[in-house]
Image (cartoon, rainbow, N blue to C red; front, side, top):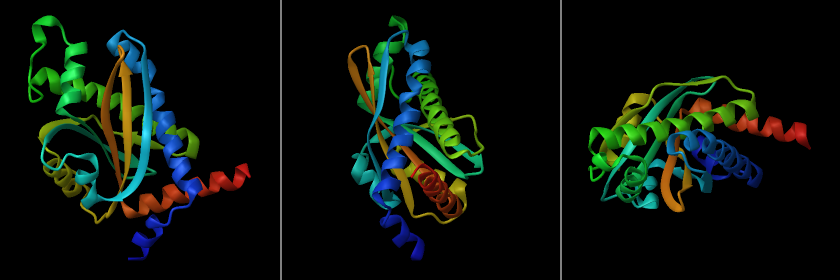
Length: 212
């Protein structure tokens, strides 16, 4: 219970730092996404929240609809998972822009759509982790992504089962990608084990003390 109270009372600096790390990481994905899309890309974080995991489906509006989600395992100095997921409308927009004429019209469950979202998700997760690593001077590795089309609750439960430890809170980033003048919305959900969350906030505050 003590840990839950600590995470509900994050300081303004901690929230600001976590959002900025997300902004830097997601923003840095633009270069790699340019190579994938052959178009200028603007990537940014619209919001960052620490939320109870049980509230995430309602907050993101994914309670009753399937999503295409891709998750990677993070390890070394921090341990947990990053889950990047897109609603069907965003998947359709991505497919329309990036797949060839012969490949368009596919459903989110198709191999080509999964492969496309997997690549975009890996770019987003990779640049996000790189930003955390550099800013907080941490060594973090990520696995290859695993992508699945299912109800969000089922995907989330699979990730929690993989973690094999109790965690109550997750960091939710609302991401926006502007590609070929079309806005694509997705979410980046980071689930750390309790010890990793403690360490992350410790490093954030240590950086704060050095700067001021």
